[in-house]
Length: 127
Image (cartoon, rainbow, N blue to C red; front, side, top):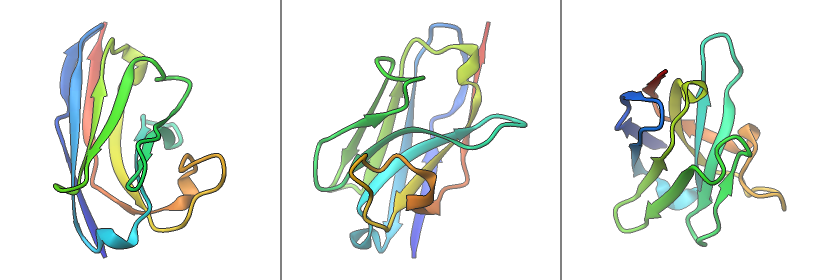
């Protein structure tokens, strides 16, 4: 099993920044990648960003590209999401996730590839 705990969410004004953290524990050696997803009320959970453990490749949703940056610290089993120039449409619960399945050529960008999830952290962006 893999346990994931997110932190760093909060309330921020339009154009502000937040840094989310995800602490992973358990059998992290069995996972291939870490990702961030978000879900707004009444909306489907959507992909935000991902990064494999073994490479520095970064994957982003078009909605957040050039504004968000994903990174990881292998030694700490931690993943981060730096969010800049936040917009009200970024308001959602953000979930950290771990993929135990090898991802496709497109990268670890599909919800179906992820098996372990954190409880989520709320991000609210005011106008």
